[in-house]
Image 1 (tube, rainbow, N blue to C red):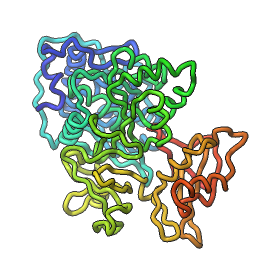
Image 2 (image 1 turned 90 degrees about the vertical axis):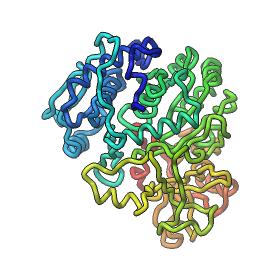
Image 3 (image 1 turned 30 degrees about the vertical axis):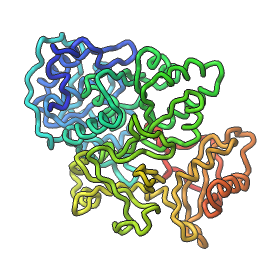
Image 4 (image 1 turned 60 degrees about the vertical axis):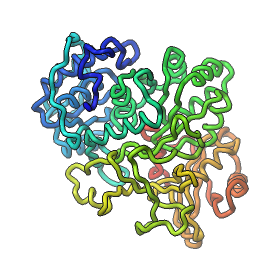
Length: 486
């Protein structure tokens, strides 16, 4: 099966159907196929191409063209700093950069041949013939966030993209009749692979908001959208808007009418889950994935939307929890590191054989670095990253996530993050970083500690509380805990 079968024959049934829309700009399947094929012909010998991944139809055409031509694409975040961008370009060595005609590109891309993306090619009765590449051939090279050093390029084969999208089709009953709404960036897995290639593989439609707004979400869901993809920051803003009487009616009705509300890229606080469910009667479901693995788990459309969990392993994905030394958990109910194996995995880090070897076990399991527990029915509860969210205090292994959720249940807390810091007595002490609901009157530290102790247990209470105006976040809404220092 081709990676994007609906684009193989634009004269077929979905030809006139809208494929993508960005504001007032819309491309039907026929127009997208024509524009992508025209560009694919130009870049067929490029070797590897960079894509200046703005939230525009040009980015979609560029990525689809690269996939049609069998040329690996490297999506570039337009907000990346000069030093990091120079590293990515040097490491991935693209010959060409694809961009919209009006884009001003930074000096780091000056040495690359530039091809402006034209979205206006006339539809054809039949698409250009391009041989379907091998399933193991690279489709995309997506760079990690670089939290532990320079970003690494994860080589994602066509096999992994297809496996993930087909597993989500199964889990979410995703069809060509679905209309996806989102405002995610197009340089990463969530916004590009799930949010653009997902609908295109199904023969469905995607409406991109450009910039997230609750008004845009309500408008698009009210006018035919069936699914919403977002990150916790977006759903937090939705929960806040639902609390405002002037705006809550239209938004609540729009969300209630959607078939699926999906959150990913970071854990959605239980407090926001409950606020949205109370206002709309609909629960947000979560899934869990990584750049290197694409999607691993997900709550099914016909399953239980259980706050605090990311569902069970998707079709074709094996998942296990292990101790720090890689052995099986001594206590199946305790916290362990997630390892996964399956057709959704990357083939390795570009130019980094040692890093690839370190990430994989001898029998092909990927070491995610994420810590979790398993519910009896196989639902996964992620407690945080091994490097930043597993706190060893007083002989206990404690996950930051459950403490954050407990803090968010306190009425005086708007946002919260939890980290560990060295402690001569405990090994590590629990530190809470809190954005107060009322900056002029933050809740006292001892009150927050007692609140957590009452909800969880005394050894999980924060020993230190620090107050902030806002938490540092990246473009996907993830809290950058390495930026939190005492």
